[in-house]
Amino acid sequence: MIDLSTNCGGIKSPNPFWLASAPPTNSAYQVCKAFDQGWGGAVWKTIGEPVMNVCNRYGGYDYNGQKIIGLNNIELISDRPIDKNLKEIAETKKLFPNNAVVVSLMVESKRETWHEIVKRTIDTGCDGIELNYGCPHGMSERGMGSAVGQVPEYCKMITEWVTEVSTIPVLVKLTPNVSDIIYPARAAKAAKANGISLINTINSIIGIDLDTFQIMPSVAGKSGHGGYAGSAVKPIALHLVSQVARDKEVNLPISAIGGISNWKDAVEFILLGASSVQVCTAVMHYGFRIVKDMIEGLTNWMESKGFSSIEDFRGKSLEQIDDFGNFNLLHKTVARIDQKKCIHCNLCYIACEDGAHQCIDLIPVNGHNKTVVRESDCVGCSLCSLVCPVESCISMVRVDDKTESKTWNELMKEYKNENKPLTWENLAEFQKAHGIEIH
View 1 (spheres, rainbow, N blue to C red):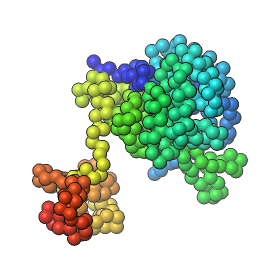
View 2 (view 1 turned 90 degrees about the vertical axis):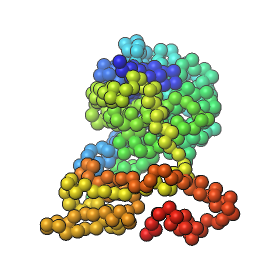
View 3 (view 1 turned 45 degrees about the vertical axis):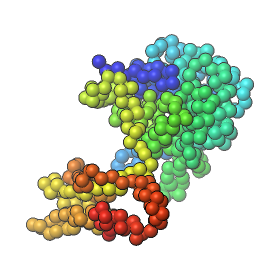
């Protein structure tokens, strides 16, 4: 029996798939429809200070024929009155008592204002609160959103205002537009937050129309920075989630956000410590129905791996993350080409010749060029395997004896103990002693 249920900072849901606070969670109609489709939870579109949105709000980044691999937006928080939102939140929770209904909040930085909105929100019967410290545009210019998330002291102060009156779990949503995300995460922990949500959108300009010179999106000829989301941000989100998950001082449940569009993406975030995952751009592109494939895919994968619950594999990949100085310098791989699969496109040769280490040769054979790796010169960078259009045609094969290990930190410690300076000559001596060719 596969159990997909999860508990993120005290907020329980039947599965880890939540809708992020965004246009898809702007009304009871949308959230109820999403729950009917199978979503485990939803974070209501941020409610708070009065706003008026503009047209146009979105800019898409298309690449190589694929639409919206990235989405830029200048949309603000909910432009519907607080009373109307709170009424619909209460109605939704009554209709779906087993689903997680979390309310995203953003108001001016006054203690009494936060106290009031938190108490009114709790009265809806919702399961939790998410504090929006991440919005990078529009609201930040008014001293809210990322203007709070970028300053740990502000993050701590406002979170404390909330936690001193909240009787339900509080998640703090962090901005990625910082030099080090650990500090605001620690501030949230110090203020007794129950969990962390990350990442919010990344500051960006999506592109320029080369005929009109207009930056997109255009609002009557004006434009500016917006929040970047979608599949293209997933690697950044994975990194920042892992940073927070690894920090022993933070040690809080995580609701992961950023480029999640299918079950595989979700699994990656859970393997890095997330308890739930939030989705936005993929739903804006393909609709609520994608959750059916996400549930089915996650269930099948867990069954194939012998996992019965989310906790069985949550954080399982975190231990692999380490400092560069702890990597094994003697680990050696070379590229090998399966000639039976090769289609003779020569992309591996071009990439290696112009962009890497010039260790692939072209040998004329029967009217075409055969690509051959000079293994003695191959440095194992793996670029050729990445550009190859044929799956598993080029493999990176380990060729060291797998018994020796030496890290940079260990090497530097030995040099220090021997009172030996680090020089190119000493490094060359080490490489020669271990059979590492220098090109």
